[in-house]
Length: 360
Image 1 (cartoon, one colour):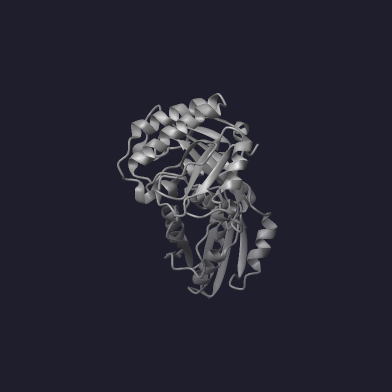
Image 2 (cartoon, rainbow, N blue to C red; image 1 turned 90 degrees about the vertical axis):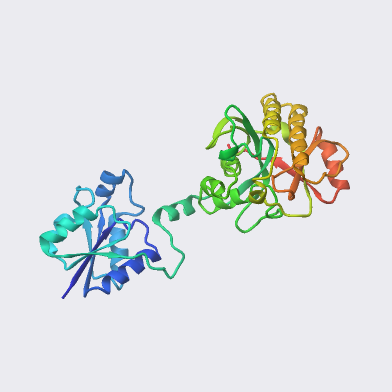
């Protein structure tokens, strides 16, 4: 009888583990699965298991493909199973391609004449997941805000960043969820950042990989009205709850989707964009909507110079701009008083109210 031995944490069982067990079992007649005890997990990774050891053992024993389950107690890194392995003397030790302890495991295999075998990462029957991705999924919020950028857009893109300059933006409601999305998509409101957060991902790296910046996932995660320092990664300069903007913001659907990555390399005046953010930052610092509107208007001037179509004038609005950098989507309109915004919304079907959102 050929005995096959595998080891791991198996902290949250998923289909990838089952596939690994099945492929390992096919190499022999008897599959032994070992997992690190709670004490070992804490010793090596400074974290507790998702469920108690006795529950994990029963779950693994319930899988038809597994013949024996061992809870290991050794504190040698990469070889918490050493004592049991030397006692059992299996024929195979099976690992995956990303095994970090190949050298010491090969040595222990030589001691008992076991074959150290690497299983390739074959295509699974399900979309691949990991224990860490499952944890992030469970911890992900059920709802998230979208965002409006007031000024300084593009200065969050690492290659366009400027030391000492700023990006000014705001998380907004109504909130969105994986089941309810009450806004147009690809519309300049940071939807990809919200989607990443709702799916348990940070989103900052994926946004940068697209050739755009980090401001969307940063403000959606932070919430509130935020001033960020331009740079390679998000650094918050300061924030406030945005109460001074309540009842004073609306968005206008231009009728076309936008494409930020497609516009990333167009020529634009980054000096003027930086100047707009300094003014907008001053407006947020002093909760002065008129001053914030000046920054918004300055930024919109750079959008027009870049070639974006003029936006309609709406009575009562003190400033407006496109919400994103992709020549379409939603446009922001600022109003000095809630009554003026409400009147504009009642007279303009494409205009809708949004409010600042801050999670305390």
